[in-house]
Length: 423
Image 1 (cartoon, helix red, strand yellow):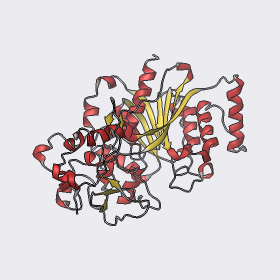
Image 2 (tube, helix red, strand yellow; image 1 turned 90 degrees about the vertical axis):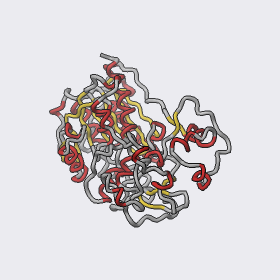
Image 3 (tube, helix red, strand yellow; image 1 turned 45 degrees about the vertical axis):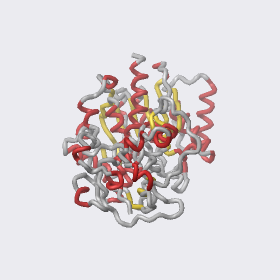
Image 4 (cartoon, one colour; image 1 turned 135 degrees about the vertical axis):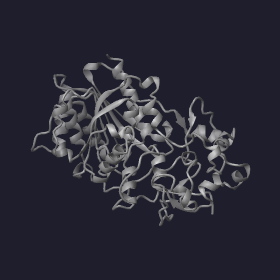
């Protein structure tokens, strides 16, 4: 049986100086593009803080972060008490936002961010959509209406873009475009949709208006070691006349294939010996495309490069937070785990407290094991200094629902830059 740590020959401290994954440099020594960017923000549905971490790295200063989940809030509070940046600067509100008024933040925040619960639209859920009480997009719209920020960034599952939900997808966009047009108490969402469509076509609307764009982004295309497709809704207040577009992909599958089969750069970078390469049963791509300027997708192997295998090296694994072996992984149809030399499959939050079968590592010999909590955090680009709180299933749920930090940062940075150009 192959061990990830042994196969990669990775756990050699003398060779790994400076490799350990950390976000501290971003907060202590922000790059030139982040200097002076301290836009006030609030974060809805903060969860484990993936989008908020990305926002903080992009220069946002949260006046408050909101969530109802006990363990997610405890994760943030405990890291704040440990003086971990940037958590110690996040005022946490553990509430159901349906019972909360955001009017105290009216015209005091520049950006509102968040990921409304995705279960109503998830491919792995019950697909109840607008009939699901967990659909909190209306609350996100209300937060925009009551705070009137310069911009907002919301994220949700790709399933929301399916043909089944096409009308509701448009309904979300129109609500965000015209947040002052409230839904009447006795109207259903289709009545409200018709009203919003009339407002859009009338050219007489004088209330709060946003230019709204929505697009599906794959986290792997932005350097995250995970194929995770999510739809982002971004709005910038119309009176700012901002010029903005979604950031372009920086990484590609073709560049990874090129590095593997044309230049061998990937195997060198991942420290895989010639002998070990012979044991890996990957098929060479039949046709390679020149990747141009794009960087290669990052793989599971690269993300876990300095982590010992928690199954085979439990003692060494204790040196890392949340890096314990979890029993019970098995492969079955539709749940085969993530291969070592590709980006991970989409991490799942799971149903009824059981994380998805895709939250597994698949070794080259076909054996599988669950990713540890720390490994999942790596795949979502959370810092090693951050400790997650709750049971294994609770922590996996927090991570499975999170926005990859780097992807959030890329999107929010682009929005911040667009707003700055208007001042």
